[in-house]
Length: 201
Length: 209
Image 1: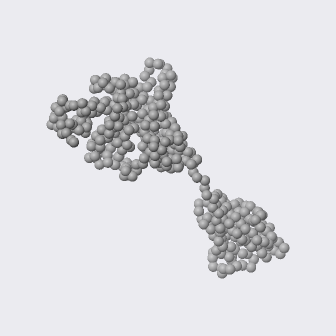
Image 2: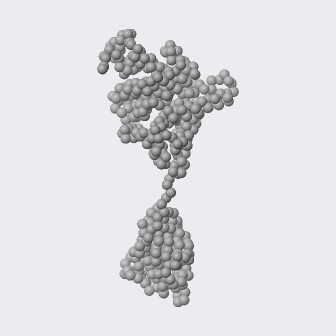
Image 3: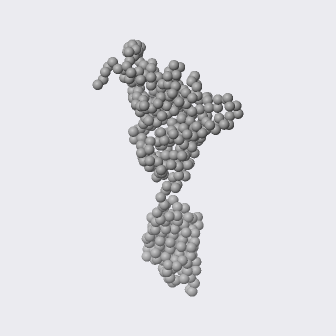
């Protein structure tokens, strides 16, 4: 379904928070639209099952609701939510390990992703990517998630339709967004195994 | 200042993703053999990103998550609603059978010697009142019917009858909005018809033989 005029739909985090504080359900819906996928993906990419990742998502946004009144007016929700989601993801991972019948079983892996790198490297990559995504505006984040991380691998045309963008702008925009992401991450530490990862290519 | 020898980030990305035409890809590959540090840094970063995208995915949570979060917000929002404003409305007399000729429909009664019909109008409801004079030395019966003009159900109304600011009766309207007060002596009355966050006041009802 094409979104009508993205520019008019977009609202800043402070606007949304203020509206939510006033009990505006549409603002809450908008906020969930912006960040639900990011939060869910963080948990999923850290090895949780779909059910556990759903629980973490629910917990994360419930915590947001509980803290709406005390959030700073200039808060950036993406990193705030990502931090809360990670914290609770770790708790689930730790719980799953304690409950493991066979300690050698790989509870935290890995029906959700393949590849040849081990869990700790995947964890580091996930942390790195999710941090980068939280530094982007909503438009870039949605575009990169759709183009590069959607398991259904939508075409440029499908992404353009979903995000209400001209097909011809997808390519240049994705490049600008990635470059912006790189710049935003600046001196952020790359995954520790960056060089090892490259050698696996 | 643009240096055409330095590949743009977008070019590097297109090259890595195999989106450049073969000739352009070949030319860029040759340029990258002697790439300087900034270009190499861009390439390294893009390689890492490609690694990440192969092992990470994005998905939306089950719909049940959204439904639960909507419910929780609804509960939160209830605590944020400002208290409703109570409205006190003054009803206006718009029909008096003693003063009007009989032309209206069911609400009007042609016999104006025994009964008196009054209709009061307000923003929230119309109230029809019939005053039935009593036999000599007997008191009056006052019947009425509330006709809500908004969504309030007829049987949500309570009707308080006062005489000299003291309550002489309090009844609830039935499902048709009808109510009755009996055994009322001669005198000046007022009536308050209320429901929810508003009330309609009829300031003067004269019961006189």
